[in-house]
Amino acid sequence: MQIQTHSLLSPAPGTQRELVSLHYGQPGQGPKVYIQASLHADELPGMLTAWHLRRQLDALEAAGQIRGEIVLVPMANPIGLAQWLLQGHLGRFELLSGENFNRHYPDQIEAAARAAEPELGPDPARNIAVLRRELKKAVLAQPVDTELQSLRRTLMGLSCDADVVLDLHCDAQAVLHLYCETPAADLCDPLARFLGSRVTLLATDSGDNPFDEACSQVWWKWQRHFGDRFPIPQACLSVTVELRGQQDVEHALAEQDAANIVDYLRWRGALAGEAKPVPPAQGDARPLAGSMPIKSPVGGVLTFLRQPGEEVREGEVLAHVIDPVTARLTELKSPVDGLLFARDNLRFVTAGARVAKVAGLNALRSGKLLGA
Ligand SMILES: [Zn+2]
Image 1 (cartoon, rainbow, N blue to C red):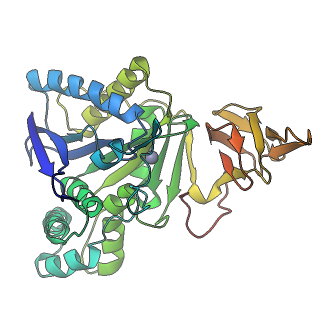
Image 2: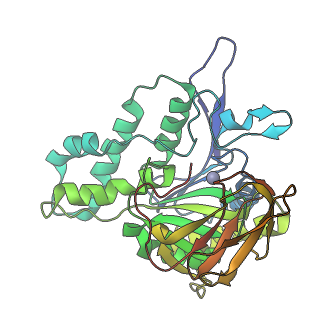
């Protein structure tokens, strides 16, 4: 394994952060897999999973079992890791700009398409190679002005030519679930089974270019761009893996999650040895536009009546919000039948707060589909 360090743009004299990536295997020997942990720096289950994964990959490397190229970034956000206020870790938004660390990844689709077009032809594999080369060139050539932009460019430069991208996050309190673009839904199904995911939330371009979509959307957008002129496969499966809730930072879970990723990588051909059969599904795929936020119309003390992972019915009361001054109790009901897959970990809410999410079967929302 080779360790690479990537210097980020220095935001001020005397300060310099760096990103570290671990590289297993050789380019061209098998699929390229890119895995990063904790892009939202206060979401730590992925960081522990990456530690277990590193140990498992070290052992596999020692046994000569690495077939593809595997890039592991065990801590994807050194900027966010340093953001603390009064003992609280604030790792979701950059404090300087207010921007979400997992939004606004650069789009080099047109630039790469223009550069690649003279070399494209009837061979899909050749088209993939040319487009990847030009995409990577365009990503790395993009000028950056800020430390955050240089972090985004570094992460995209490491991942944009991968066959498989896993971005390890977590929710506040949740069951394991995935976000994936609809054009890659079929590619995602075996991964969801190996990981034991309860639900995969599908969208095509959910808005604001989160990291996972920036890696996968190039392919279906190039398909549209080139139409029937050249065959362009969906050459990247890129998935946000929500490893349950923020407090679920436990060895037993992380070791099993890492082992499940290893099983998937073997099935995918990135590791030698006989692959296990694809496990039975623990859940299904549903539209992200059918993932319904449960909002509180009032402020007060929040207490839940239902747990993440429970199936709920339309109209069922999921939580109470108590006003301690007036003694008023407000019921928060599910707007749909579905899976209560995530809920907040705060227990005092302000009016308008979104406190839980229920994944229904039907797409009911439109516009930007991701929260802040
Ligand atoms: Zn996250």
